[in-house]
Structure formats: structure tokens, C-alpha cells
Image 1 (tube, rainbow, N blue to C red):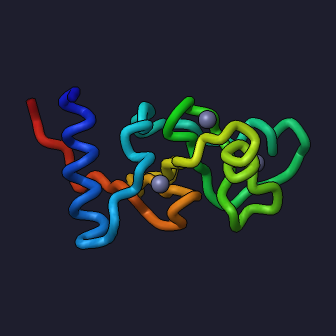
Image 2 (image 1 turned 135 degrees about the vertical axis):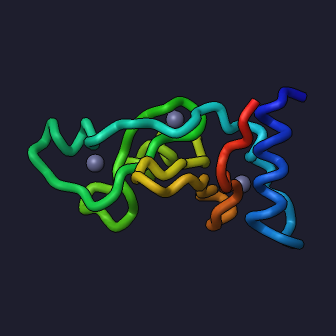
Length: 111
Ligand SMILES: [Zn+2]
Ligand SMILES: [Zn+2]
Ligand SMILES: [Zn+2]
């Protein structure tokens, strides 16, 4: 198991307490992004409320409170069920299948 996966697993334990593990956490591949816009919304001239990034492939989308819900559409279309917040100051991963936050980083440990 990679060091990253260990960190994710540890973060999951802190995020969910005694709840049943999310089976998808091992699929997390994408770290925090500095994306500033939802490309699909920009292309269609729409606005969005909060940015999300697919935690599996890095596709940028917008949150479920946004008009177009591009992140959720990507999850359904591609079967990528994990989405990470791309908002500044937020670092958590939501699982659409489990309908809850399944991983959260609480500060980075220096190497
Ligand atoms: Zn899950
Ligand atoms: Zn969008
Ligand atoms: Zn994806």
C-alpha cells in the first residue's frame, strides 16, 4: 500500500468515526487542485456556486448547489463516485454512493 493510501485511510477513520468504511476510498488519485472555474459552465456561459474536482480522474465540475451540477453529472456518466472540493480552505472527498464525506485531510505532515 502506498504512503498516500495510508494517509487517506487514516483521514477516513477520522472523518467517519465508527461508520462502515467507504469501499471507494482506495480509488482516490487526485490531490487538491488550484482550478478556478468550471470549464463546462464557462463554455456555456453559466455560473456556478462551488467547484469540485473528480478525485479519480481530475475532471473539474461544479457542486450540487450549482445550476448544472457538472461534478455530479460526471460522477454518474463516468462512474467516478468520489469528488473532492476544489474550494480554497476545503479539503474533503465526498462519495456519491455513500452520500457522505469519506476522507478529509487535516493539515499536511511535513516529510
Ligand atoms: Zn463510497
Ligand atoms: Zn459547471
Ligand atoms: Zn472522473
